[in-house]
Length: 267
Image 1 (cartoon, rainbow, N blue to C red):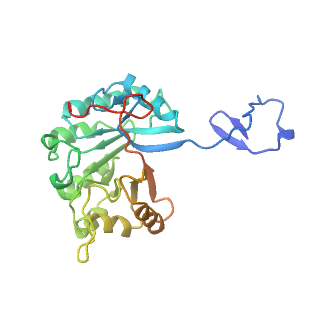
Image 2: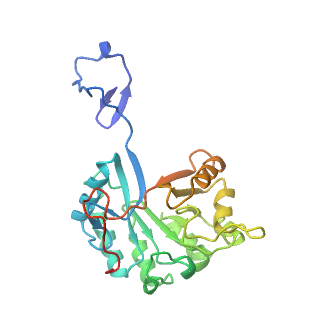
Image 3: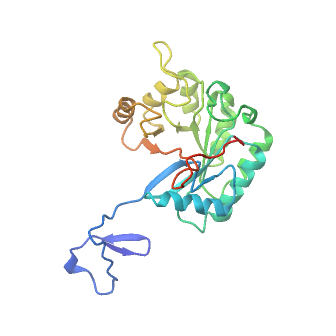
C-alpha cells in the first residue's frame, strides 16, 4: 500500500514499491481501518462530564486508540449548561490539533422523563434561549445532538438543523406519527436503537418501529450483547439499509483503565 501524506494512492506488489517510498514492515501484522465511535462518554479513567478539558479529551482518545478506535465523538450527557459550555470549549480548543477528535455528541438534556435512563432528573430541561445561543456558536466542528423530538417544536428542530447540527432521536417517548413528522423536519436518525425509547406494540410502533421503518434515517446501536439481545441486533442489521446502521460503544470512564468503577453525578 502506497501512502502519500494522508492519502492511499495505490496498492502494488512488494517488488514494485518505488524507491522514493520508505518501506514499513508489519511483521505479519494486519493493516486495517480504525474504528469510528460516535458516542464516547469517557475512557482512561475520565468521564468527559466530570473533567471537561482538552487534556481529558486527549486521555480519552488515547484510551480508545489502544483498542483500534482511531476517531471519536466525545459525548456529554445531561448536565448543567455550565458543564456543557466547558465541554464545547474543550473540543473547540483541541479539534484542529488531534485527528482522533471528530466533534462533540451532546446527549440531552431535552428528554422524556419516562426514558431519561441514567440522566439525572434535575438536568432534564426545555430548549431555552440560553441553549440556543450556545448551539449557535458551535460552527467550528461537527455536532450531534440527541433529543426527544416530542419535547421541542418542529420550528426549533429545523432551526437546530440550520445551524449544521445533526439531530438524533433518543431517550424519547414519541409516537410513530410524531417521529414521522420530525423526520420531515430534519431529524437525522436514532440514538442507541431499542434502548431508552418508546417500544413497539401492535397498535403503536413507537420509536423502535420508526427507527426500523424509516430507511432514509440512521440508527446507532450498542452491540455489547448486554444492552440489546443478539436477535434484535440481527433484526436491525437485516432491516436497515447498508450504511444506515452503525455501532457505538456508549462507553464510560473505565475503558482502558484499571479501576472497575467510576463516578457519575457525584455517585
